[in-house]
Image (cartoon, helix red, strand yellow):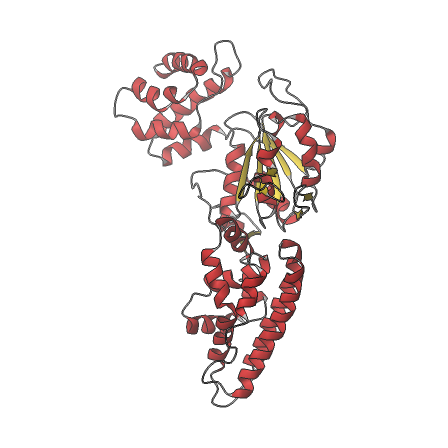
Length: 447
């Protein structure tokens, strides 16, 4: 269901009105109204909307007057709110006022006045009120557009359809962003159900497991499938606080009152966003404390330079992805992993280990990519040997990924097997892994 339906118009009314406006019901009309709700436009831009004539040509004075009154009254209340603060903190209030506007027009549309084209009247009134906002959207910075698009109403769709999981029950909220969907990514249904529950509740969660199990891709593909914008923060000991939260800047030689958001604050301002904290245990411990307040469901951050309080936008969550569960490394393979403070860990609703796919699922995936069953099975078995040897004296630092295996399948037969393996896997690995991978290939491939 589109936002504009929720705002009080029946779908048929909007469909006809949008046709009269020459735009699609699922496109720019949603963006115009959503932009107003998101607080993505300035007060001056909204005030400019009032300069357009409210009485459509060719409509009787009585009906035109009622439309003008409904639009102007709602706009006046919206302007009062925006004059105080035009950001996501006033979303609920502005949404209420926009609903009042739409319901007022809907009521007028329900009147069957003789010889009056009610559909055209509604369409023209809405077009006149939001025309400046349409232009503002088209010229707005990308970050503002992201905030606006995120408010374009989401709809609930079957999980089975959204995630290509036939037979999976339930539905999921889909937002307005367009991520790059990887059709080959395989979701673990049990983990997916937990993740979707977290999205509905607005809970953060933590994924941990070996390198190459797909933790990062799970978060990226979860965002892509549900139409959410994803912000990725790759944590390490070289990252400074200003990189992920923000810092003061310089504007025309002036540093007073100038601030530049870091990745996390950008995510917090974006409704429905997923902020991926990748390898979170590698971050500097003194900076992890600063995350606690941001991880709260009603998390806020006060910008020291300007005094602005940034609120965590509706639907926004954090996902941590790491090789450990935050309690330190017991294997000796992830020496850079810090032990996380329990207060930080408590701000993640659940923690789940991500494992490699079962052998048959990996074989089936490679078959879909063009391998026959023999080649697919042989390649997966060799990769599993590499995985088992990770961390051993004669083993690789990390095993080949499934994506590398797919590349091997695509180029299989173009040269000797050894050369294809070298070009698609060994040459893309670290020098510490290359020799071990070559030895495993030599011993396993012809066995």
